[in-house]
Image (cartoon, rainbow, N blue to C red):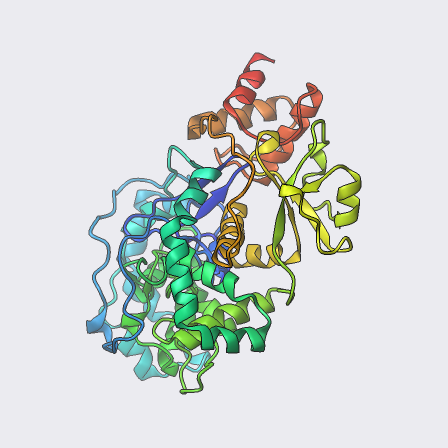
Length: 478
């Protein structure tokens, strides 16, 4: 799966909230959607997972996993109903001005035609190139989705409530039982936990019941020729042509997010090329309509991203009062035994299986919420989709699918989510005090968390990087 940050709609995770870009009908998680979602940084969307765009809000069902699929451009579903706003993009990028978009759109046919030499170098025949590019027209609505900046973010606990609920857990267990022989074979071959694979399937598409509605070819062609990510998406478009030329999929199957992530576990075209496998050996790598290929390809993605067989993703932990939250950083990796020496305990009083396992501490809601010790496999999930909230949802859903309990510690649900204007103000105030060195953009990522920790430490508060309304008030008052 890919790792981009542009299509599975793009998700941004801040110290307290997760930005779920509502990329219109079919917003998905950016990710394994891996490659896509992770790579499109600096935008309100990223293809998540194999490409990815998380689907907490996706609206249209995927093509049936079992019904035959029609071939050829005529089989492509219509694009989203909304039209481009005709306005400049919120990013301020020169290629996202209304004038630049119109000029590029007017040159769209010539731009697509100019990609033929590179397609030929990749082994795409002239016949295939002409067949799959015939009649392509730009989908300018994507320009709004690429630069969308939602006013409000979703708190991580609300995000988890959406993605890990009783209905999804029940559906996931049905999937695991129905395809048990396939999960058995895949787990034996790749060593990847079946519950993690099932969780990705559930989070990305709610087990193939939700997905995007845009043609991958049209979307990636549009983004190849228009807007601020042309070089990146040109590779995705050419990769999509390769997939079609080789006959693994037909255009009607390549339908998904605006950034090009497709299939129940959301592969970007480049991720498909890298990770897709023909597990049932029927001559095609089909991550859309073939359950064996879908499960195995997702497992192959995780294995190549470093998944360690026999190891879990992490543990919910209790963090003691007065703990130094400057240690809660991905770069601060210590053994479980060392964390225990600092007072960290597994939630519920359970022992840790191995004190030698290496982990970092994640406190997504600061000192008022639960903590988590994250092992190497959590990083593998992050490579599938770089959003911490996404990776936490995958691990959490996987544990629930295997019969585990809900998280034991409460979230600070009384906290108010900051608006975009407030997030921007928080960054500006941190910059004025010398803590934040980036360009204020209203998105609460790692740099903002680091800056906020510095400010909190300077005033004697718990340096947990949690962007609360109360902390914004403290900044205003300094």
